[in-house]
Amino acid sequence: MLRPEPLILDSERHVLYDRFVPAIHPLRQFDSYLDFSFILPLVAERYHDEIGRPAEHLEQMFRLLFAQFSLNLSDETICLVARESVALGLFLHPSITETRPLTVLPRYPVRGLT
Image 1 (spheres, helix red, strand yellow):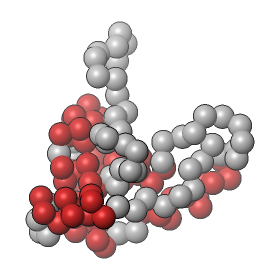
Image 2 (cartoon, helix red, strand yellow; image 1 turned 90 degrees about the vertical axis):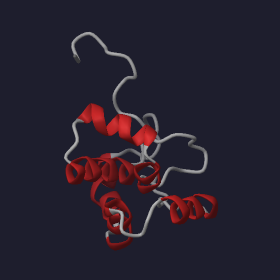
Image 3 (tube, rainbow, N blue to C red; image 1 turned 135 degrees about the vertical axis):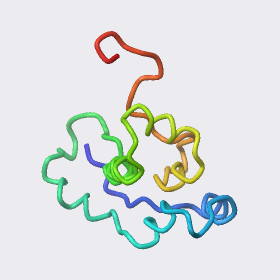
Image 4 (cartoon, helix red, strand yellow; image 1 turned 60 degrees about the horizontal axis):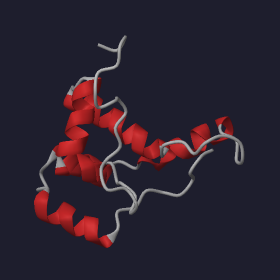
């Protein structure tokens, strides 16, 4: 199931973004110049409207992938940084119900992944 709603920072998080992330920060500049909403129409036909569990927001996943590539971080490191960095956490545009940015890898090592 695809979540088609766009990712928009609410006013509280926008204030945090303005206060704690300087305007010259690369992720803030990427956020202001790039529109990541193009990914939703590209993959919409691959998701069923009613069958399956809701997927992570694809725009958020693409933002995470873009940040990983632009900051030259590994999979594990980008997940750790997403949990700790205010700049990256706000760049991902978390929804109002999310308290922490998403993580892709498990918190503890799993046999076969290490």
